[in-house]
Length: 411
Ligand SMILES: Nc1nc2c(c(=O)[nH]1)N[C@H]1C(S)=C(S)[C@@H](COP(=O)(O)O)O[C@H]1N2
Ligand SMILES: [Mo]
View 1: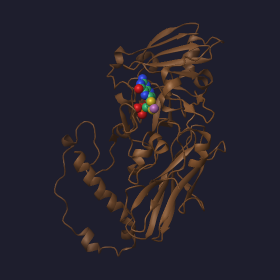
View 2: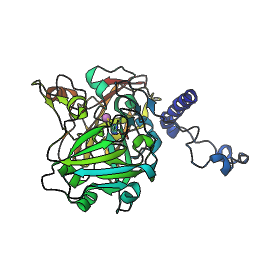
View 3: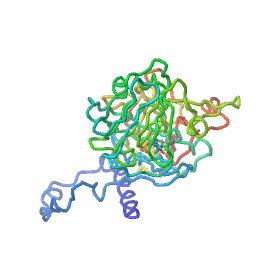
View 4: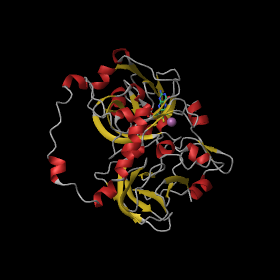
């Protein structure tokens, strides 16, 4: 299956990159195209099965593995993604103790601590609240860790370097609404969110974020959450590092101080040049990457190509994306797909005539707070010794004269 997929994917990639040549080539005559005999009868509806699957020729599959040492990582095929929504079956995955299969009728959410009336909710209770649907990205703060700590290989793909981010429409209940029912005590400043997986993963979330836009999510892209995304219930804290978006959520405790869990003091903390570590950095800062052309693709001769990719910011909306084809010497503003959503992937596109000479492609986003995505030098100055988390530096791809594209990390 994977072998077939890989072959198909390569073929498709070549076909799509060759389309620039096709655009310029003489069209086939109408006779050749239209006057072929009709195809014989196609597959029946019974063969499609009860849950539709992608075409056998469709490309894009997750890269399973854990090259950066995280348990249970699966990466989204960004170079073969279109628009801004990640199909649920291609959403990235990170879990620290496997994926539990939880029957929803057995699932409970306990809310206790600094509330007037602690309560245990069933899924039915939660789904009776008025719901909201919002489009948000989710990114593991370890995304790009490998690129940051060791120079990447020329064949490291965008899926390997950036595939721990995805974007979905999430449906659920604003957490504030549920907590207001119970009565939040004025001393409550933090909330512990804990998952019902073997790792019992827990993170401390500041109450101001809970009040602002955290929500209890039960559906993704129009259907119930995938088990891998936290079925039947997860917390979503939009724009905050992936780790805080606790899956298989079963307990929320309000307190006047944070819990200093293992996840927040050891794994997801950021070293600084003065030898100290920053904890609770929360935000995923503005970041972008060109997904096509990108490493391991081949351009089929000079001519027209569309440079495209995604940009996002945990602090708000993407305001603009600049693209360079000369390694950052000059920049051009890319077109942004609209509407642009808050804390969501934003698709950018820029028409490009490749002259057949070596070109170094970069993208640099600015979010609506005015924050500009840094290059590696700027990031190294901020965060050293080189940190594991929050690599959001500008990525460089080099188009070589023969049309092959390689990862040059930064230039
Ligand atoms: N209960 C629980 N929640 C969890 C995790 C986990 O291992 N257990 N992994 C976290 C990490 S590190 C990330 S990056 C995100 C990944 O979410 P996803 O697998 O839905 O993409 O979930 C977070 N929530
Ligand atoms: Mo993560």
